[in-house]
Image 1: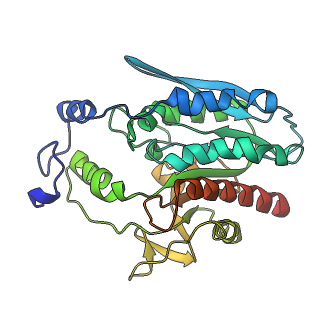
Image 2 (image 1 turned 90 degrees about the vertical axis):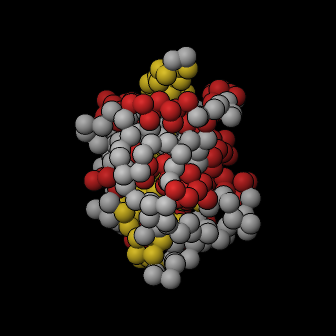
Length: 306
């Protein structure tokens, strides 16, 4: 690996230890407020939906209560859906798309499906516009037994304790230019391996769970979102982020086995959305709207085909 492609922390070919992780953590600076952007937004919902605290992250001197919104008219006879955002804190429209859904669309599903919405799973990462948690762990690889990332652990314990039978799980993400110029180089350095450059798709796409892909469900999300923003095209090899294109804007990924959030439940209809916010063809508002459209399409399809 040439020095031009190596991350400025660590030694090429050697995985990070505690010293390198501490050096990486010291570089991270707060750039926005979880309380102002997320907690206050939930509080403004008033009595339209129930807000619960499902956990807390303690990263002294910072402490982050973890909140979720639940249908205030919860009916055990109805199917249930989990919407998650901010598993990667830097993926802004995942957080704000979940909040926008709560504000604008959640009421449309009252009496039809129970909703659980965790809009910002990784608030430390949200504030620092960072993919990892303070221990340089990727939360979206930690939704499986034996992992120690508390962002994932708190959500999994809460969902397990509730015991709901989930019909739908939509996990809201972004693929950004910073994946190529910051986060992929950091990952290669952290793990002591060579950096393999990856092409960032320009547009929206979804990653279905290869263990249970539900192709028609995935296509329904693309059909809804393409009315708002453009859909990612395959690269010269017919892939999106290294995965073969299954249909326009749709790829399969092994969500459960890699510890991705979209794979930790037994929801029949599950997906990971991916918006490209750095495109000159879209805006932050369109990215948020695309996430909302994807959630609504997921709920509508599931209700029609359960």
